[in-house]
Image 1: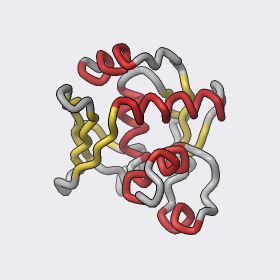
Image 2: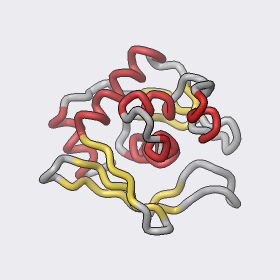
Image 3: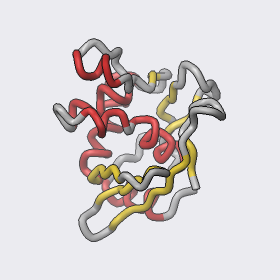
Image 4: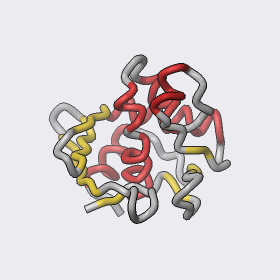
Length: 138
């Protein structure tokens, strides 16, 4: 069981797994809703984080209103939105994907429940490595 990084009253419980055959990460929210991200898309998200932020902290950046009108700051949510144009729900899933990438050893959380940020701590993004880490997290 995993939890998003919001405060105790706002954090959400979820599970996740790698569906090897189609090569997709599946996130199952506590309400049963599913989000999916392909390995190639996750790889592109990580590469973009590396290019844009290097090892600096980056924000969650997943406010639905700001994503919808194009004014959200650069961060994980906006990078996801570039992979999935017009799919705000996936971009809002940044809070879930960030935790998954943290649990797989790619990201480090800043420890804050308000002003959530992560930084990249590993840049081994080959599909085989990504597959192994999602199938067998640390």
